[in-house]
Image (cartoon, rainbow, N blue to C red):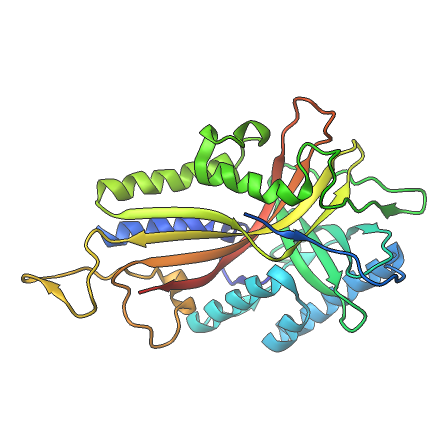
Length: 350
């Protein structure tokens, strides 16, 4: 389920975190784990993976047509559950329906697994409506153990103009899963998220910057947040941000050039603190101290009955990312983040 609000393209939601923080500012005037092995089992085949994908698409259509949130969420796991649950909460509060994308024919990347959790990736053309312009989405499906069913664990939209990753396949059509500690890559898969976060948090001068290619989700995300922070300082308001790891699993597959494509999830926390935060109901002289406003797009995520935010407001956004991790022998190649997806999932403060 890659649910969206009607009228808000999913591609825009992937960058909503810093934009929301900017709206707050103007109104005011670490990392994921990789799937691990378990009991020996027979993993999915390319044919059975296609069946899983098709069953998901059919069930998603039924859930959306019937406005059945419980059914929609039952199809999901991992970060995708949190992202879609937040979308439903905000859309319901705003009185808007939740919509889903229209999928084209998928290309499946199925590793040959002999243990739980089982998982596979799929790239697929995705559009907001039948016949509309399409972008390439990458979806990850997983099954944690024999007692659970297949679920969509995460999804991203590839950046415009970026082709689908060239995943290597053997003669039987199977892809190769890459271990989290694989040292043949430029970066081990289990440090990709942390390296990415260092560039977003500290910018081009960070120690990790030489290993990461500039782009909208790396240096671009740093620059947009740094610009907000500078504007905040000029207004005597504090703005901060931090990209952090999560406990959600990451997934990696070998590419044809010996590198890997890595899917992982991060949390972007952005905070706005007024220059003179006050206790609720207090005033300074004859001037009532300002309340930190909550943008309309986020009001549905504020718990019912929550008092006004006087000391500050923090927005946590859940983002999934897709990165190409070069082979260690590619001397000049850098980690490239090629896709993202997510929404604000939690609003808190005091």
